[in-house]
Amino acid sequence: MSARAGGATPDRVVIAHLFPEALNLYGDLGNIVTLARRAQWRGITAEIRGIGEHDADQLKGVDVIFIGGGADQHQRAVADALVALADPLRRAIDDGAALLAVCAGYQNLGHAFRSPHVGEIPGPGLLDVETEMPVGAERFVGGIAIELGGDSPIANADAQGRRRIVGFENHSGRTTIGPTMHPLGRVVIGRGNDGVSGAEGAIALPGEGGLTGLRIGTYLHGPLLPRNPHLADFVLASGLGRGMPVELAPLPDETEWDAHQRFADHWTAIRPGVYRRSPLGRLRDRAGALIGF
Image 1 (tube, rainbow, N blue to C red):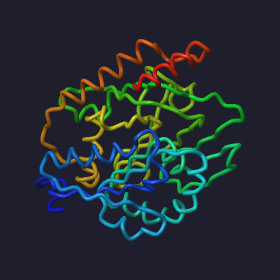
Image 2: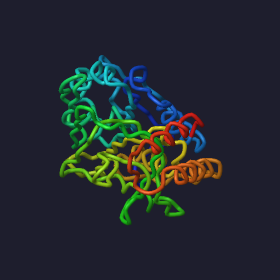
Image 3: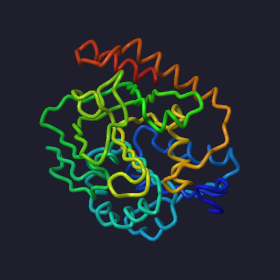
Image 4: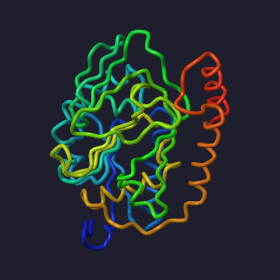
């Protein structure tokens, strides 16, 4: 990296992809592609490092850390490795790297994940959350839209001040946020963390919870970042600036925002309001998934 916050935008970004083969559900690799392309379009060289259990040294000097979703058995398979990587990951985040964790990654990086299928999986506590999967829990499946709060730095960093994030959820976990994090947003369409609180995801801004880097966990798949360029840029800028986001050159994002709007319109039509599950609702979800939205 040639510079940090307070100077010119760095000319290189290093992106760590944790367990890319085991945790890559619903196209989560697209999040890596989006971060790399949005950097490259600005003349920033992107280096992507696949990180496995024995790759702790590869976390040195990373700017962005991403972990995606996977089935319960995959969560179990990587659990011990994540605990073993906890200290190197914590050091990387405290050095200013930005963390984005999706679905299973969101659950696994918390304090614990409990499921009747795999028992209790202890986590490294890099996200101040805990997740339970109750016996016979309803599965939350379908499009989801959340609204960012009025003081959200993600929206405030966007030139248009856009406050919506869209994605696709598919989980039975019920996630509770601890005191050192805040909800990423308020559910407008869908179910979110637990289907009751109206909250989705968790965010700790740089400096919160005693760590320098940004941390975000969310259930939004799809993949998430291609349809939400403002979030992609916020994660990228935060990592490049080591917790103090650098200013990124604007990009012509008409195509991305068109995809965002079409996704939101589709799910608003078939899944209006904060969704209450019903046989008809489940049928609509399946139809929407088959259509490919």
